[in-house]
Image 1 (cartoon, one colour):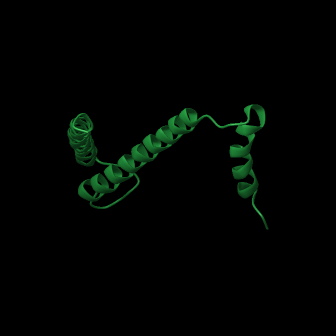
Image 2: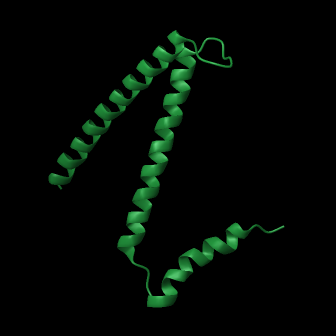
Length: 101
């Protein structure tokens, strides 16, 4: 049985050209950037959840006790701080390298 994905996928890209003849490369690049940002955010959330769960939850149950809640909150704060520090350093390095080109 054929899913609608294959036919919809091709028509999404083809429909942009029907009205004006050419696809707008700038629009495509912006869409790709948005998709990459969403994928990065999903990866960040997944990694943070995995690491903090393993660190803070000893015996999973129906609810988190007070110490688990505090551990999760602190773990997530530290993870986000670390992520932001690494991101700033990476972006700074990219800017320096672009300036040297």
